[in-house]
Image (cartoon, rainbow, N blue to C red; front, side, top):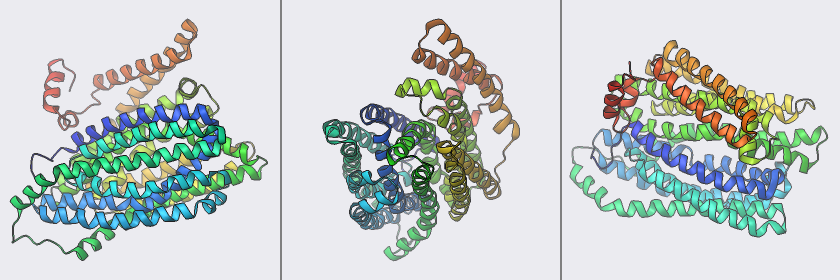
Length: 535
């Protein structure tokens, strides 16, 4: 593979990690002021439109980009560049058709979806969301191709541009339309999301055009008449064979989220809440608690996106040792990152919400939901590993089991007046816990990965307990001294992060091989060894 494209999976993950961090910052600059502007009820309308879009988006695009990434990386590993490019072309036209169909369904079915979900005022926002399905489908083709080449830069650039479009256009329209009612303001914010996806697709088109000559030159240079290039029909068959199980698996879970929304709204109304009150409670859950909960797992997506071509390439050339090592490294890094995020969110739920939203109405929800950060992060990475190893039906089965548990738990608990909306985060936590246990068993069986108790559990727990004690102590002391929640919260987070990092280094929780796979990893290892920071 040419130097132009190839990145190690951690280098690719780091690129996407930086992009995702920027996207989350931009997203916060959009969503937090939007929350102030339209309140929990308006965010409930916004969330209703967004979750139905997410479900149709997953059906339209979830499986194919991963399938493209996997097939392209396998073709490149076999030095078959002409086939890799042909896979992209076939996928592009297929995704275009799917995107147009999804847009039509969402636009013309807007009122039906809004009424079914128990939030009739959301139909304008659903209509405003519909064009984004087409643009996301187009982006997915480009992203899958570049990721298959193990080049994560185009994906990163398009994600940042998409987020900027959402911020500028979305908030502006919401501000201009708030005088017409919260449903119009929510629709304006959603229209900004659609505009962002258009700009992201445009950016990827531009990057592809700039790279086209180089891509074609490399195809010509690698052309070997002895290497067979599959026909368009064979490629479509293989794309569908890989993509359909992945799509079913992810859409099963997205569908349970849609059912979750309908169930929360309808069950709350069944125990005496009005539609506006139910929308307000759902707004607290979906756009206060869930927004904060989604921050750490969104960054883990960078790791899961990057690991698919890395593990798929290793399996394509039967390098089981590399696949095992990459799998263990990915899971270990996920635990080291997600565990402190989970405990931190749970312990500081109320101060964090006061800092970000100046509204602590979702504190109990986030306190419960924070723990699930560890489980959902591991689900993202283990799903990616299973898909990369050619076992896409395993996550389907496991997510279906978890989704059923979530629906049953929510139905029982949300319909209980004493529990009400608090049943939703309990159901989510149970759901992800069950999925990750089942996934880890399958990953171990397929890759022969070893989950050493000391490295994967004991050392992270020692570090995170130290962090938790320091966070609580620091926050309480600072509040007593300066009587300022914002400074106290930020100070506690900073101290907690430092203590956690120092404890990991002190007990040898960070592995040399993990650092070596990062950009300039060998140099970082040399510096850390010089100061005696690695064992």
